[in-house]
Picture (cartoon, rainbow, N blue to C red):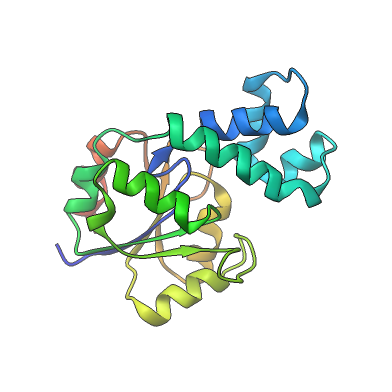
Length: 192
């Protein structure tokens, strides 16, 4: 199928939320309610930092903790390989650093499906929902669809008139909503 997709990584391709939460709790150095931390992180990390009174200057430290936990416990979502294999081209735009993204993709033999990985901050782009990283990708690749689990993943796509898929998040605006990648081909690709 000649479809080209831009994917978010954390919470979209891989279930990294357990690692995000563990890294955040380690950063906070408090016994926080992990369920509550998860809800704040699902909004975005800037909001979580603010809510818990953690200075933004500690973001690098958070990234280190998160990457440590992520390499140990993060896994791709079920049926993701079927979704990746069903399209012509896949690109990742992530706030995660490129080294840890490649590490996880190689660990689970998924690297072969991706033409490019854009690490937003590492490559000097403004954090999503700013659209600069998406515009960069569009200069290099035709993109038909953007898949993400948070509003900030889909805002730039909507601004650039690209169809969107919300993964495991029925509360955000998107052209398609799915809870499992088993539904990706029949409920998304077959309807494009």
